[in-house]
Amino acid sequence: MFISIHLLAEVDQVATRVGVLDKGRLLFQGPIERMRELARPSVRVKTGDAERARRALLSYGFSLERDGEWLVLEDRTDARVAEAVARLVQDGFPVYRVEEEKLPLERIFLQMTSQATGRKAG
Image 1 (spheres, helix red, strand yellow):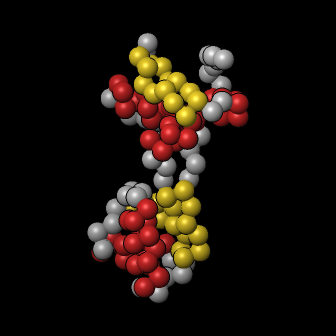
Image 2 (cartoon, rainbow, N blue to C red):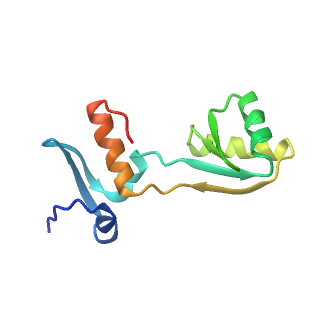
């Protein structure tokens, strides 16, 4: 069955495979989960003192941002995330939570179409 729709929240609930078109070009076709993997969701780490923990990880060469009490890692590979958590624990920082942010399809779509045209995603 083929459904053409702009309400991406509904697509997320009913579809397992999607195709992304932008200006007549097929940018992606396949399982929604593969589309999510390509979007590189952020990995967030919640620790006791986010600013001190951020500085500590920067000293080890990690690229990250602070979002309130969360650290958002730019290198999202499993090995690098595990290394960041290990460094924090080794340095005495409590790690309360590590989570991968599941991006909504609308945001993934905007990332894909902005990358295809060179625009900045909003």
